[in-house]
Image (tube, rainbow, N blue to C red; front, side, top):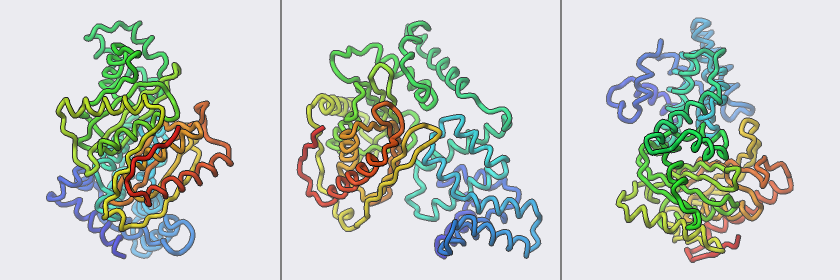
Length: 437
């Protein structure tokens, strides 16, 4: 199997100094593994159960255990290999589909991993698997997520599983750090308590103190009669490499996400990560990390950032959502990728997860946002990933009350409308279209 061969090759590359630039964390971890041969065996068996019916991870674990027993491996080594094969998808799934800024999410993962040794082996196996599936899959975005999950889990294991990090403690520490930064800008503690009283816990769990201070000062100084607050800067720390960071504070309406997406698409910019928070005062705080459509970083000239700010304000103020569907590149038109839509209920975040796989094309996110806003469904967060001509996006949704989408009829309608809207986008020829909100 070519994939398995490539995964094993990657595990060997982690031992070589000339791969440090591409896999800096993996090479560092791999060199301190107790016995690298255990990683090679896990890589050999990780997908061996595919095509046989049932859970390939479970089937592969059985085969791995038989192999280890037949070849005289110790019980300790056998148990580690079996565990790795059985859980080889776990770390990738949690990194990409869960809110790994939540201490409770980290605690749950740490309770499955249990030991630092398991974490080290699982990290290296996961990276080898991702990079061995498609070299484009191992990018700055996935690398950042995996590194964050590994680091936070290592800290949880060091503290001890019986001493979990408390959400409230994290929030207090984040607020304290942000307040310290704002103190030098003339803000008093009582003033900050008032400004932050409408924020939800997720905001202080997911945002860095530096960004909270940036947001807070700008919101306090902004004349809201002038419309939405829009800020753009080069991100000092980004989940996707050298991205630009956009912050928007405006009225919380179902169409807001779609309007911002439409504005960015007219500027040939693509969103790679989005964080959306609804305040109790009826406003929304949205952060987007963007690159040019070709994957390059933006020109950091002030005029460039001003143009982005002006375009977003313009789209937020218009009565209709306008999307510019640029001509789809020929290289993308050559591929036909069916659109799949899947909903699931996230019991930890109390949101509904929407997973979409489809062909990449201009106007994609604005179309999706338009469909959701039609049914008063708001986007609370997004993990957006483009893999060549294919996109695999995850959105976290809430209904008008801020809860999960529980109505089966609504979910069926949304699925149908999304497939129709996104499928239609593959056939259009790049005309200006107006989607009424």
